[in-house]
Image (cartoon, rainbow, N blue to C red; front, side, top):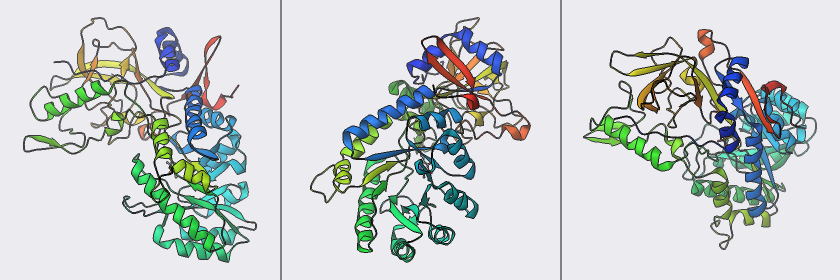
Length: 465
Ligand SMILES: *Cc1c(COP(=O)(O)O)cnc(C)c1O
C-alpha cells in the first residue's frame, strides 16, 4: 500500500508561482537551497479579510500584528504600510518595528520584559501591555510622563493556568498601583492572550475583563480598550477528508492492522494500548479547516452572557470600548513556504526509502511536532509509480527525520529535485537549531506579483510599492 496523500492548501498566488518550475529552479540557483519564500501580498489579503469581519461585526478596533511569528521585514513593512499596529515582544522586535515604519503610538510591547526593554519601550513611546505587578511598579518608577498601559489578565475561570499576566484575583493590587501613580500610568484597558481557539473560553475572558472595566470605573480609572490577543488559527490542509484518511491509516499502522506508516517507535503523541489508539496527536493543528475570519466572526457574534442576548462585538461597541487584537499566525497564514532540494535517495536497513534533503526538520516544524500536510516534489519522477518515502534532514542526528511518517510521492525523486514545504511562515522559519551544526541561516526572499509577473528580492530589501 502507498500512503494516502495529504495535499496542502495553497493560495492561487503561491500556486501560480510554484507552477513555473523553471522559475522555482532559478530562485534556488540564484539564492541557494534551502530557501524561505515570503508572499507579502498574501499577508495583506489575510489582513483585508480580518478587517472585513471587524468592519461588519465590531465597533472601533485596532489590529496589532504579532511580530514574533516571523522575523521578516517584508511582513512587518506590509503591516506598517497597511496602517495597522504591531505587537513586539523584545528589544529587537521593537527596533525592527520602528525600522519597518511603525510610529511609537502604533506599537504595543507584550510578553515578559526586563528593565532594559521597559526603558526602550518608554523611550519609543509605545503602549505597554503589562505582564505583572513588578512591571507595573517599575514602569511607574521609570516613567516621567503618563505611560499608556494595558493590564494583561490571566487566571480566568475554566482556562488553563498561564505563566503570563496578572491573576484575576490580583486586580485590586494593580488598581492600587494605578491610582497611586496617575501622573505616571494611564490605564488604557485590559488584555488577554489565550492559547486556544475555543470561542467559549474567549467569551468567558471577555466577560471577566468587562467586570474589571466596571471595577476600574469605581477607582476613577477610565479604560477604553479590551485586547483579546491572538490565537486565531491557520488552515493548512486542502482537503479534510484526505487528512482524516491519512490519520486513520496512520493509526491502523500503529495498531499493526495495516502497513506501518510511522518511523521506528514514533507515535505522534498517540498512546497505543489495549488494541486501541488513545489521545490527541501532536499534529492536530493541521486538521483545522475553519479560517481565522470565521473564528473571529463567530466570536463577535456570540451572545455575551448577562447582556440580554447582545453579541460580544455589539456589547463592546455599546460600552464604547475599542477592540484590540494581536493576530500573528492568522496574518501570515499560507504566506510563506520553504523550498529544499533532494541530495540523494537511499534505502534504510528496515527497507524504508529515505529521501535526503539539504535542510533540517526544525527548519519546517518544531521538533516535537509532525507536519501533516505533504511536502511536494516539484519535478517529474523518472518512473511515475507512487511510493511512500520518508524525508530525511541533513543534520548528523538520528532524530533529524523531516517526516517521521511515510509521505506519498509520485515516484522516487532524483538528486537536485526541488521539494516544497507549504505554510511555514508562522513560527517555523526562525527556530532552527541547524546553526549549531554550522549550517548557514536559511535565507528569506520576498516574492511579489505584478502585471509583469513575479519579482523576487531578499526579504531585507523588500519595499511595499
Ligand atoms: C504570540 C502572541 C500573539 C500571537 O499569537 P498567534 O497565535 O500567532 O495569533 C499575540 N499576543 C501575544 C501576547 C502573544 O504572546
